[in-house]
Image 1 (cartoon, rainbow, N blue to C red):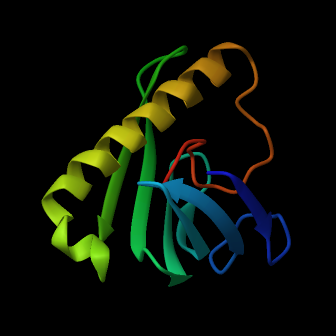
Image 2 (image 1 turned 90 degrees about the horizontal axis):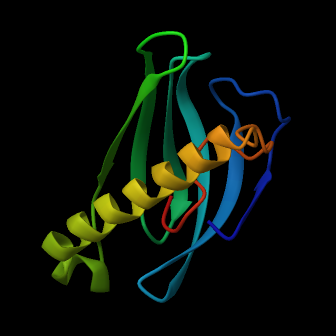
Image 3 (image 1 turned 180 degrees about the vertical axis):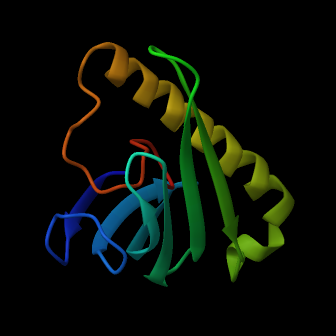
Length: 128
């Protein structure tokens, strides 16, 4: 993710909307996301409502004890245009990008920087 900004108030709830710009495969991807499901502290689902790369992302957190948790991301989308040709490769690249996002998020959390006030994508890398 290169930048994002809220289109609605910053309190996260179903219906919250934000604009995001990311880089993926050397292209700029501009998207508008809406929160479609939200369970505070447990899960969030966002989907693009305007994008050149339409996706839906569900992120969930499962506590594993006092100091650990399991974070999952399920990313679904329909590749179109030039991306459709490369869909099998895209799946791997998106998985790698999401993995890199979570490794960075883990580093931020361990450093005490986990709440940076960003929209609820749960990621800080490309294509999220």
